Amino acid sequence: MSGLLATTLDKYGYPILIQTANPYRNECSPKYPGTKCFSSGDLRVNQHTVLMTLHVVFVRRHNQHALALKKVNPSWNDEKLFQEARRILIAEFQLITYKEYLPIVFGPTLMDYFNLNIRYSGHTVYEPYTDPTSWNDYATAACRFGHSQIQGWFGIYGKMPNQYHGRGYWLRDKFFDPSDIYEGWVST
Image (cartoon, rainbow, N blue to C red; front, top):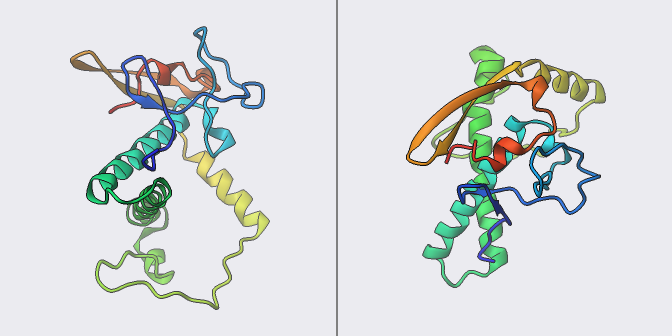
């Protein structure tokens, strides 16, 4: 409805991911009765709190765009609202990747060499001769590289009634446990 992604609510009434219809396929270990693992487009969503949080943030952002587009374009149907909100969110994700993440990983020399810097005027040029495939060994190495960037300790912040509280956890203690998300430990 209105281009929105489906959500459920945390204990403070903020939107979070929907519960999985098949908890045995998405194995996790909720601490509280009545809570289940989450369902998302990525089967790894329930691995740990940070990954769940990223999914929640992007679902909320998509829905924020869909609601804003509905106000500006009241004649658009559900599918049009969904696709346009999706398109904006993908653009934001790409901007974060190319403006914030890759420059830290590659540095300015490689960013220039591979022409990865963002241009704020003009447009990018489609290169039909560029082969978009990747080698298995590269994909495996990239995956391991990404995993090596994950730290063992995470500080988390959530909105409690009328104030913010922070705490943290060791990653090893939070695998497949969605309880922090249900408890409202996703900043709004």
